[in-house]
Length: 112
Image 1: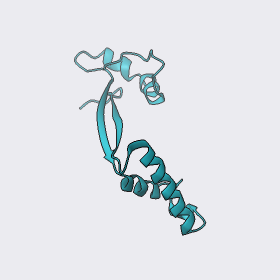
Image 2: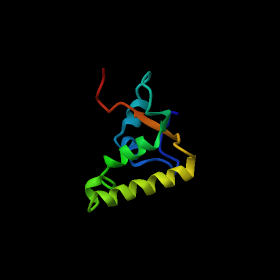
Image 3: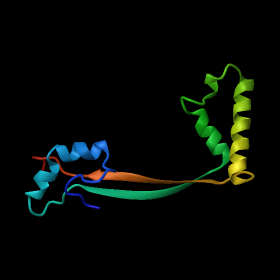
Image 4: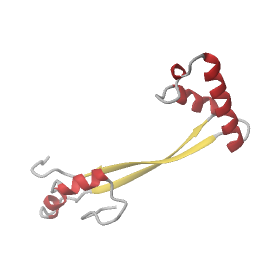
């Protein structure tokens, strides 16, 4: 998708910053140069319960060090496993649908 100016409510702050730098104005007045463009790359990842619990251990909000003792952390992981089992069945898989967004543009005065 190529945009010449932000006009939709889904415009994100980084897009607003890009358009306010004048990149869109610069490329519009330079024949042959593309304007700012957004590219989306959809991905799907499969997670097992073991992967989810391993990921949670690396976060700042669910790592083992945040619990007073090992028993509380073990109880947390058991509760998480029970919740995930209720959502997907025995051991998943849990499928995460995501998209990476890449916003490409040229800055004024920069040529290659």
